[in-house]
Image (cartoon, rainbow, N blue to C red):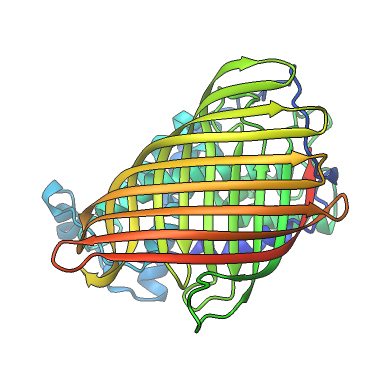
Length: 463
């Protein structure tokens, strides 16, 4: 059930993009909230259903044609009989694809389905069903294998979360009025992370053209944090060495502004590095879907918000991937003019999670299940000079398909950061991961995995 591995390839382009002055930029700093922040205004574009439906169909045909005529993959030999069989609900099963294929490639494919409509004038909510429809067509008519339960969940929910994230990122990247090489580089990066919109721009003759002076631009603040250093995932493993890593963090907007608009704020983390299992070690997205302001004054404010979350973790010590929703309480407290505290508490359902186990089940070294997650975060910022962060993530899952009966993990991370200049900071982040795997026919497994990162961060902000 392999598809074109687009998302893993485009991560390197995202890292490249941070070094390019694609729009007006300034050193990233603590941004004081504007009590009269302007709402995000999305001027309704003309809805082009035929173009959107055609784009979704092309998103089905390209990976199928590649598999059929280039790689000659057996699963691409579809027929009317295979389609008829796959249309039966009783045919659905759990597949045995590689972990990155199921947890990255399929969600990325879903983002292309989503943006086939999002890039052609449809809203977030109007585009969301396209991820489900595209996944269903692929599972029933794009392969001769049994339709996959895990794929349709990953492709739909992951596709919506990734899709809206890259939609907003490409809009920011393309609003620059720079010309020449940098303009075409921005167009290329945008095409890589959001191909549907890129091909639409080519078809409409917009490729390489700068926005008009009267066009409404997205003024949402985008903070970019690039980090590099050394890390070790398991300090208890004498055979494991410290390796070099690179991490990119994008902070788009603020959860307290425009909180009724889906993805008016989101955080994207991506990390790559030396590892014996995977070059891409983590991708995490948390995007706000809707919020309710509880209270607000000159120093403090509290917001209740629903977030859509995508998680992918893959390293030599453990691997985990999931799609989830959380309801969160975001709070900010101003102790004085130079000291601020930010906190968040959240919990919610995990629709589907994939997690590593000690054996092999259905050809996979990982199981599938669903459950609930809990998280807590706190940040202390003193004069934009010293920062302390503490993070907790707990996941509690009952197995649907696998050797285990249940799985739980608890991750504790603390980070100390000191500012060396307006753009550069030095940080250290010790961590502790606790994992428990309960097996149906065997002894339970308990893992204690301490880790450590030491690195430098470079921050810039785009408006």
